[in-house]
Length: 157
Image 1 (cartoon, rainbow, N blue to C red):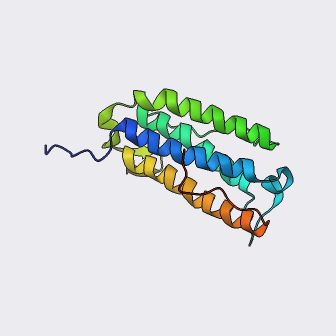
Image 2 (cartoon, rainbow, N blue to C red):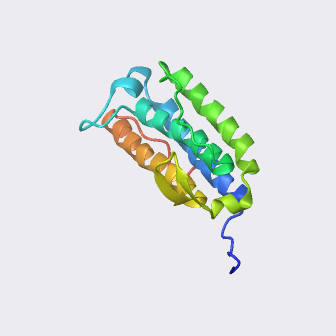
């Protein structure tokens, strides 16, 4: 087998992902409470639902990559911004706990995620991040429509 050149270490990848999560958290916090759960544009879902989708994908995906066990997140939808932020923070802590335990070979292995999608571990993780970025862009449109300047997207500190 030809050795695979590594662009990012797992630790660097996790740091990159958590930078996106820190930014998305600032987007959640930027919304007025009511609009977070009710405002939408063009029939899209409110940002609270989009953010919940993101946190409901993250842990089940890394658990599946790590262990081969794929379970959908069945947690209830948060009812307030504070509850949503708490779920976000809990998910972040779980990601930080589980991610380092993913065996290195699982990033390149092909697996059937949730019994439905054939993909490699790293491609699944990139999809989770891509989905978060997509929904954050929707949130940016929502905030601008509400007259609120979105958080500066290059700042992931």
